[in-house]
Image 1 (tube, rainbow over the protein chains, first blue to last red):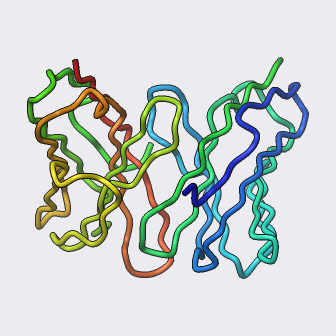
Image 2 (image 1 turned 120 degrees about the horizontal axis):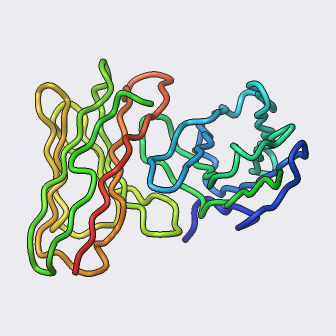
Length: 111
Length: 113
């Protein structure tokens, strides 16, 4: 059973546009929700993370929106750039325990 | 770049052989987790070590085993390699206690032929 469901599988956005990736989870015990960015042949790099006591967190061009009642969270990339082209993974965990990852979203930003 | 290092970068093994992958955690981090990432998939949790003890295990058979050393570095051992073991193996370090982020190493690409 997939603990974290991620969509879309792939996304193509024009430079300067907004990229939006969505995730949903089932386990209400999850209390930590990070997003990772991964380039080909590299390990995942922590981008931004949120805990369920806030509904939104912003770091630069990256924003996480969190809806606890709907058990959903999303990543918004504002002013998308070609250098943002990568695979993005959402994840969820109970603090200190294993991460459950989504299946990934391949983002392509067209110049 | 995180402070998590892994070796080797790439490895080619034959079915039935055994392999050992190594990881040095980020300074100050006492917890190491290992993940398997098949091509085009998200990472899957193998197990976690905290203070040299296994502290959680995912849905992987016993031929996947590990060690953590007093300096918090870690090894992943896989016996009787199968073709499906071909994947990127990721090490991640964190502080088990508290509100700590988890940082991944660059991974070891294992190919089983």
